[in-house]
Amino acid sequence: MLFRLSKYLLLIGFTSVFFSTQANDLESTINSKIIERAQTITLNSDYSMIEEVSVDMLVLNRDGLKHALIAIQYDELISIEAFEGEISNPLTGKTTSKLKLKDLNDISIISNFSIFEDNRVKYFEPNAITFPVRVKYSFKRKYLGNLFVPGWIPIPNYQQKVEKTTFRLQFPQDLPLRYLEKNIPVSAQESVENNMRIVSWQLADLDVQEDDFPKEDDLSIKVAPTRFSMQGYESDLSTWNGLGQWILKLNNGRSEISERDAKWLRENIKEDEEPFQKIKLIYEYMQKNNRYVSIQLGIGGWQPMSAKEVSDLNYGDCKALTNYMMAMLKAVNITSNYTLVKAGSDEEDIDIDFPSNQFNHAILSVPMERDTLWLECTSNVLNTGFLGSFTSNRHVLLVNETGGHLVKTPIYGDDVYHSRLIDTKIDLLDNGNAEIEQERKLFGFAAEDYLAIKLMLNEEETKKYIYDDLSIQGLYINDFQLNVNKDGLIPEANIKHNSVLNKYYTSTGKRIIIKPKFDNDLPFITDGQSIEIKENYQVRLNQNVSPEQLKSEVILEEEGIIYKYQAQLSDDLLSCKRTIKITNTNHNKEAWKKIVDRIKKLDDQTIIFTKNQ
Image 1 (cartoon, rainbow, N blue to C red):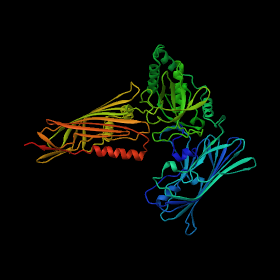
Image 2 (image 1 turned 90 degrees about the vertical axis):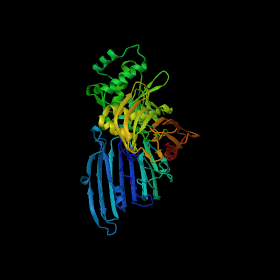
Image 3 (image 1 turned 90 degrees about the horizontal axis):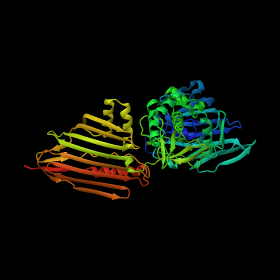
Image 4 (image 1 turned 180 degrees about the vertical axis):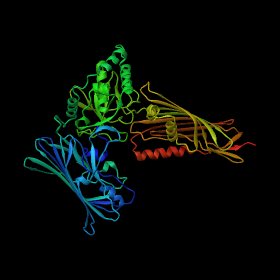
C-alpha cells in the first residue's frame, strides 16, 4: 500500500526527520547528545499544517554520526518550505560547513518496489575525522491535508543523551487534535492564544537507552485529528467509522469491471457453484493475470485504480487489486469488504482505542455462512483464504456500506498451521559419511515461503534455498523434488531430497558414534498459536553392533510444552521418533528463546554403539 518506512516515520505520520538506530557497545556509551530539539505542529483552519523542527546536537564519536543524519521526506502533499544547517567544532567555535536546501541529496525512498511514486527524501550525512562535532539544523514543511499528523519520540536513538526536547501542538479550538501519550513523565501544558489552543510538553536530562531497551517502555506521543481533509475528501476521525466513511468516498465509482472480465465470469462461474469454489476460481484468475506494483502518487496513495483499469493494465497496488477482487465478486453477487491493515510479520497491533491512520496495506474480507474468508490480493502464490504471517492475528478496519469498524484477522492457532512431518532414512558409508533420503511435509506458515519459491526461482536457486533452510553442515544434495499444494485452505509443501552427509559419524576400532540431526528450527509464534514437529529418523548402521549409550526415551511435559523422544536398535537399524508440540502461553521472544534452547539441549543426543567382533 502507501507507506513502508521505518517505525519512527510511521509514528510521526511519515513526516519528521528520521534517525538511524545504532548501538555497538553494550555499555552505557553515549555516541551523541541532543542539546536541544524543538518540534512544533500548527494546524490551520483550511486543514493544512505547518511543521517546524530545530535540532542542536553534539556528535561524540564515529557511531554518533549516524544519529546526525539529516533526512526530510516530501511528496506531492508535503513541501519543504525552508531549511538551514551548520556544522561546527564546539571546542574552537569555528563553523566548518553551512548548509542550504540545495546542498542536500535527493533520492526516492521507495524506488526499489514502486513504479509510480512521489515519495522522496532530501538528506545529508555529516562526516568527520575528529570529535566532538556540533550539528545544528532547522526546517519547515507544509502539509496539504491533516490525515497524517507528526508525533513525537523524545529519545530518537539508542546511546543518545537528550538534554532538552520540546513538542508543541497548535490548532483551532473548533478543529481539535487528539493525542496518545505513552510513558511521558510530565503533564501537558495547555493554553489558548488568538483562538488557537496550544498543548506542549518539555522533557530534560533523559536517561540514555541501550539497544536492549524494552520497546513497551519507550516514550512517545501519537497525534491524530478529529476532522481531516485530503485533497477535498473530508471526514471525521474521532471514530473508526469516520475513517471507514472516508475510504468509501475514495472508492466510490471504481467497481465497474471490464467486458473481458465480465465475459470470463459468464464462461467460468456457474450460478449453482458453491460460494467458496466461485471465490477460489476468481481469486486464482486474479493471481494468474495481474501483478502487484506500488503506486505512491498523492491521494493515489489511498485511492485505488478502478477495477477496469486493473484489467486493462494487468497490474495494481494492494488497494487496486483488493478493489478489483471486490468488484469481481460483486459481479457474481458475492458481498465482500475492503479492509485496511497494518501489515508486516513483526509489526505490533494498532492502538485500537485511538482512531487514526495506523494502516499501510489493504486486504479483502468475505463473510461466509459459517466464518469469514480472508484474501491477500497482492499475492500470486497464497492459497485462497490464507493470509500468511504478513497480515494475520491483528486488528483491521473493515469497511462496509455505512463506514467501518475494527475486527481481527485469524490467529491461525491450531498446530496444523505450524506443522512439519519429517521422514529421514540414513545409510552409513565406510568413510564416516552417510547417504540420506529425506521427505519433509510442511503445512501452513512452514510452507508459505515454498509457495513463492516454486513459482519464482529456478532449479539452482531453489536448491540453494533448500540448503539454507535445512542448514545441515556437510550436506550435499544430489537431487531434490519440490511440490506445493494450493487446493485447500492451508498451504502445503513437500520436499524430497537424496543427499550425502559428510562426516556424519565417527568410527573407531571399537565404537560408532552418532549425533542425530533433528529439525529444531522453531520460529517465534504469537500468544495462542501452536507449533508441532513430528520426525521419524532411521539410521542403517550396516554393521553388527550393540548399544553402549542409547537413551530409549526422553519425555518433557509441562504447561505449553510436550517433547517426546524414543529410540531403539533392531538388528542394525536405529529408529528414533521425536515429537515436539509447543503452545505459546504468553511467552515473549526472550522466553521463547529459552524454550528453543531447552529443546536443542534435549535433541543433543550422542549415541554410542560397540562393534561386535
